[in-house]
Length: 312
Ligand code: KDG
Image (cartoon, rainbow, N blue to C red; front, top):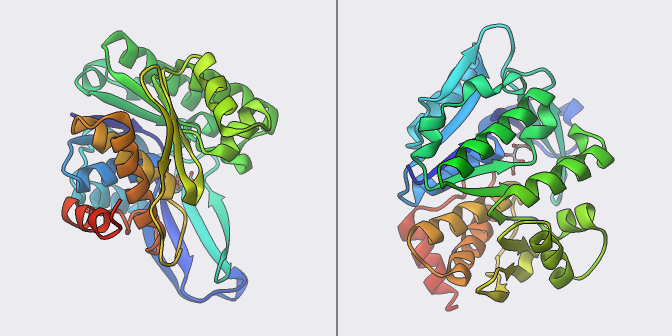
């Protein structure tokens, strides 16, 4: 396995019309969850990935499992809970460029994950473990599950990748700050956005913020700077990696997961850090040009064509 990830995935409902959702009659249904988005992004680029989770024993759980399995991600570690539901998530398009997200996920099946859902041998067979700051926000059990997964990874020489993925609707700011700082410090690679970095360490410039993550324990910091690209900081390498131009942003949700998938894909393929981040920038840009959280994730051929077309 190249990358194993762990987290909640929901059915995403998007009204077919824009405006307030109370007036919406028709919805499209898609599958979305930060961690499975990354696993799918990597699978489309030809890598071996696995996703650990719990789903409700309901039709939405079945839909999610078969969609993710269909994308080529290993779902052998997914369990079904017959006493809790699969989480739902709504993406209301208020205007052409204003989105409002609403979750129905409290006490969902995934929020009941525990470290019993983890198999150390399964994690030990991966090169990377990818976890995010969404999972610890779901419940104390979920937080412990992330800590245990990290412990198994460290014990078996698996590189831990942490994406803070701050979701302020899920917890209080002070607790979120404390947990995200702790988990960032336990990761080998951390992938914060500049806003998340400021949330965790206070307002500052990107260089000082990257240094703060580094001093906090992360060995490699890859900071997302939106359309400007990214800034990297490790012992071997420091500096900017320019972003790719986007013709029109259709839906920005999921871009960070695409970025993570691109960076990890580059590292798995043996690229240097900045070249891997360049791939991350390209995948992130491509995701924003398509509606849906995973629908814009490219295969290898489309990615190469996009990167060559923009001559960087
Ligand atoms: O990064 C995109 C995710 O935020 C989205 O797919 C849904 O996992 C999700 C969440 O918790 O918001």
